[in-house]
Image 1 (cartoon, helix red, strand yellow):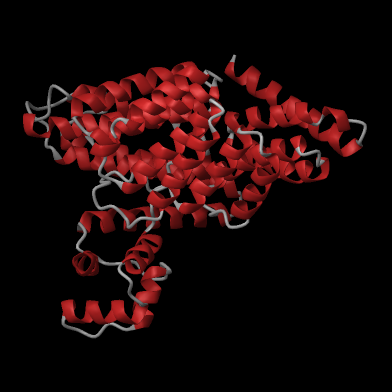
Image 2 (cartoon, rainbow, N blue to C red):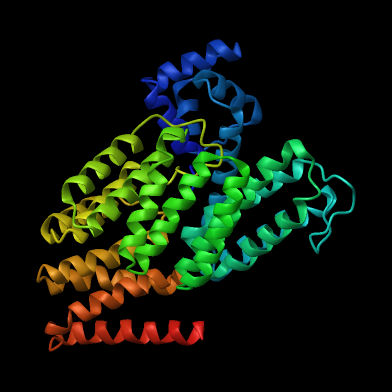
Length: 431
């Protein structure tokens, strides 16, 4: 859900939004840089076979009239993902990947003392250098980038520690930087709440979300406030609190005219569609999801400075459309939608693929297709174990219950028992 945009995908999308071919983009860059740029160079940058240097980041940014900071952060994300992929392919795979990532996070956090914070998060001078906020932004990007690959259990401690460190800085940051510090604090608190939700600790998730909402209001950032309200609606939906989910989704929509990022608006509208489906209002649900689809396909917004809505792509909205159809009871259309979008699902959204496969399993079971349910259920269970996602296990528990009429089949019985065992393991871990 939180996955930020890597540089290759961002460059392709900016170019296509501008209506340029790779050759035309090469010509534009050649004119700006005063040296020949070939189509092959543009292709290598877009495929991430080569990384943009700061020099070319600026020329690319100028060619699309966007901030160079947007490209700089996308390059950092691409480099982090490349390291994770190399570590995942090494002997020991996931364990090496987790150790490597957590070591990198520790290194980023260790850079903070030089900027006026000791290891306990206390200030060592009257005003902390505002550049510390940029380091927190980089650290959050690293955590968010790894979320779908590593799962919440590997990240909660670091995310919580950063919220505590930011709290220590509120009285130690210069007044002109205070609003931005509240912004990044709200984002860390929201992310910490997201991780709690994925681990099944919804009470903690709500506490963190309330902190995020308070700080987003203190920052005055409408995009963050709307986003946090949308997330709180999701939390209520997880807990089957229909009225609360609908009310919070509507509260989020009231910010729609103030939200700068098109993809953030897409995220808000897709949650409004989910809430309307819970109310059984098919007309409004489909209207909201159609609006979300249109917004997700809009040009990349340079106003989304923290990449809040970068995950809300056309593929993401399509899989949410399947969930809306599922909630409305249209299982045949939902199954078709799930199958279409999951065939093209991005590899980096590993944990989210497990969640949607689990939901697809429930749809197949409700449609009376146990073989189809088993196919997606087995893969969803593997991903749930890999990423330690309670949400996925919770969805699979629903699927297992729906498949009880076919339990005489050995494969179904084995699946049902495996899901129950996994749920028992999660329950003991939480206790």
